[in-house]
Length: 432
Image (cartoon, rainbow, N blue to C red):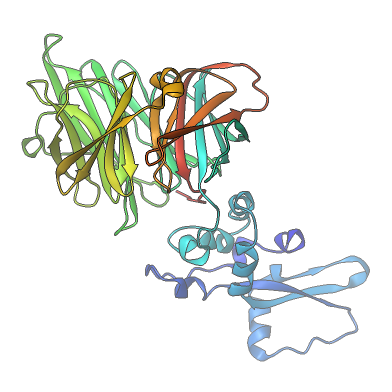
């Protein structure tokens, strides 16, 4: 593979010019194969091949002894077959070789050419010391009590005034940093390390709070960021709220935030929770009405329509989760039990689960972070987390708990101000 790379240049690659989202257009590309020929030896090629070689001098080169090398086309499906057997991190490097290689590993073709094979993992986002650290670990499907996982470090991003990490959504994560009158949102891929900083949102008055959420439209295959911001409009209690949307485009050139028409949006008051989740093209997040009623914001990523779903409890600590493809809300503030609400056909169903006696004390200080494919609820600490830490698997059917230890090499017993734990993470080579 490495021997091929040095003979490939962007001059050898031309794009089809097709905008159709099909794998056939990319198969029109060709690759280069080495053919070594000595000076006295004639190379028998067709007229078409001669024309191909003459178009680009980079397709032949002199080597020691006057020997000359020629290259002739090989169908790109051979290269795709090689790529499909390479690890994810190698894919991220291949895109830097040439336009051809970059085109193969970029959307919309990547998902079609390289179907997801890797099992779901845990994604851990540690925040501390002015940086964001991304780690992953295996996610056991049938864990054993007090078994251990070892987290693998991927990439680190420096941050200033970080206030929120959201995701992952189809392999991408977003985080926001806020100042006195501005908001900066960064979308990144924890595996490849690639990231893009979105245009800075400037406020004309003092910024009180902001929440930025990443969503994905499975129909149009588009990522969008929704930013909800609250600014002072006179007195401390007189707040103005704005909803702005940005669509992530290929190359990210000339992308702009778009203000949503406030006349079509119910007023959303500021909340303490920064929880949110994207399920099947719908962004869900906490909000409140003017009369302090708890609501769930419901943003359709494709149509960019915002609605509010009433919630039946007072302001407290709740966690939004994807419960078997539906919106779930977990409340874990009681010593003896916790409550799970599931949104089914715009109505809430409620389920109460009693905690096992031996785990009541340990689970009470943990927050729900998600659900496994088998329906087990996952709990973990989020604030002031000391490494190593634990993830708790709660089986709702057998009413049993399994505790799994997570080791983070190179950090010893370091205590992190904030930990975001995301289960069911699938590695993607998403390029923006």
